[in-house]
Amino acid sequence: MMLKTLQSHFFRKTTIGMNTRCLWQWIDYIFNRLDDDRIKEIGPNLACAEWLMKNGAQVRWKGCKEYVRHYDYLPNTTSVHREQFLIQQVYAGREASISHLGFSYFKNCKHISEVEFDGCNSINNKALIELNILKDSLISLKINNCANVSDQGIISLKNLQVLRHLELKNIKNFCDTEKTIGFLKTKLPECNIEYYNK
Image 1 (cartoon, helix red, strand yellow):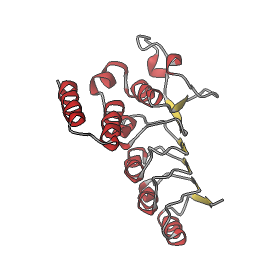
Image 2 (cartoon, helix red, strand yellow):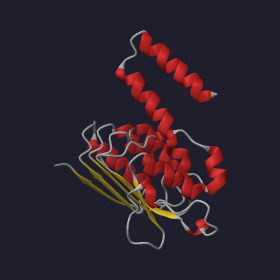
Image 3 (tube, helix red, strand yellow):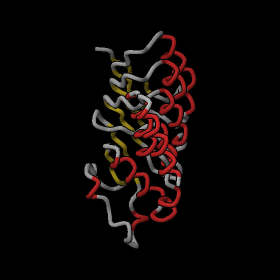
């Protein structure tokens, strides 16, 4: 029913000259919206992995060395052993389109300790604020060349109290780098914060 309503809204907007931004917002919603039924069916880790892979991101399971890069390589969801698949690491590069709308998938994925956003333009300040969901497990975070991240999003990382390594590279929208980094260092005294700007 909701999909039909969205489709109706989409095509009505199209007939009156819908702009590109509205189209991408609609697509973003469709691909990143939370599917509670799927989480109940296969558990939080596999549902989260499906969302990430569907949107071009990669995952590494706890106890494995390699990333899973293709949606077809996800474990069989009917497997009785699916509870052994726990996400430990997330990588979202230029090809990824994950957004804050889907970050609720991280809830109950209690083993995610490393996240890297590398040139992922769908990551913005809202997404960094939503990372608070991982405040009890996230140890390492890397943000490189994400065009829609600014001081506001970086400051929100103060809530990640178990974070031990934060790497920031090429954050083009920094207004006051020294002030923002200084603030984070006071809020996260146990965290090694590295900032690079090429």
